[in-house]
Amino acid sequence: MLRRMVICLIIVGAGAPFAASSSARERGHVDATPFSYAPCSVLSGEPCTGSTCRVFNHGPCIPEFYYPYYPYGENLQVTIQSQPSPDDTTKYQKPDHELNTIGDLFAALRSCWSPPPADAAREGMQMSVLFSFKKSGAMIAPPRMTFATQGAPADIRNTYLKAINASLGGCEPFKFTAGLGDAIAGRPIMIRYVDNRDFEKQSGAR
Image (cartoon, rainbow, N blue to C red; front, side):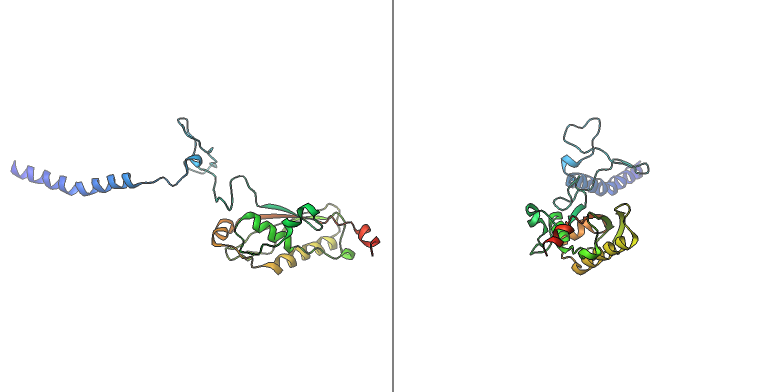
């Protein structure tokens, strides 16, 4: 009988540290997910974010948030015109500091654009390219063309793609802050270039 009591005391004493450790972990646990970003459920009583699970995901999945660098719903897509309107002039000015927001990045991309000369260009030409950055601000690979104006000859398409590569290549590496570099590294960026110059008007002004 005494032996059984000793064995029970040993077992209880050995299990106590594990129970205390588990209790401490529970008390010290902090949910790092902001309440408004928590996945919704039937019993949700607080603001929540709808689940975005795919077929092979297990458990609730929520959108990735990189505020203020990559807020939910903001796509990394930008349109760049060869001749911006006077109202948009400030959007085409290169930031005089490290790029810290998506707006800074877009402004830097706009300021980099150098369209083909008029004698090699095509009025109204549009071309879209897709690429990604490394954390260092350099492109992972050359931009890939995803769209070009229908009916544009191959030499015109090549001319614009070369101008895009030269413009972006001449600006890299882009100077990202650590936060922006972490937020956008590897993410696809789409740029739509629109050559909205009026070549007839330009030639008449000479």
